[in-house]
Image (cartoon, rainbow, N blue to C red; front, side, top):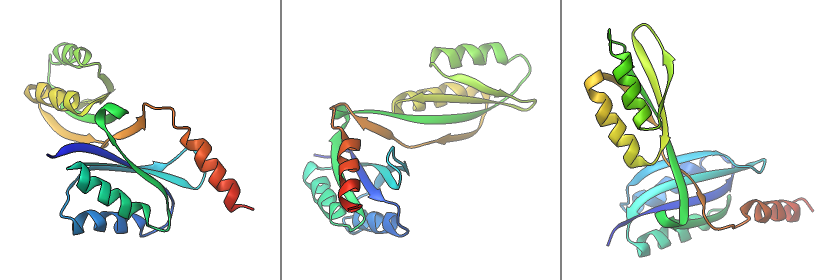
Length: 176
């Protein structure tokens, strides 16, 4: 049975690695629902969060293949109940006469905030889970959403893994 998994990868920052990782998914005909990558807390190390819907067996095989990539330091998978995850969403909403007060009520009820008030539009920001982002998008439609962007999932494990201790130890080994 397909479930949602988050694959977290720590790697060196080398060109072509992201392409090789996505090819692993393509070969298995597995769609990536979301992908984020950025510098980690350790200099020279990047962190990827990849969300997929698949069976546990399929995802374990993919993680095994990713782990074999030379530049990959560690890859592992998590289920939603094992991680803390969020997305950031930006909504550009038309600035119509008399709409601000109603818009503020909708925005406040979702824990979002208006981050820019321009002559033609409002920019709204929400940091939350996927479902809440989708609900706010639906609730903003009557105001006229003219642009919408979301970050994709960022996540950390609930367990105290001390991943940065592991990465620093590896860095010390390599610099000897």
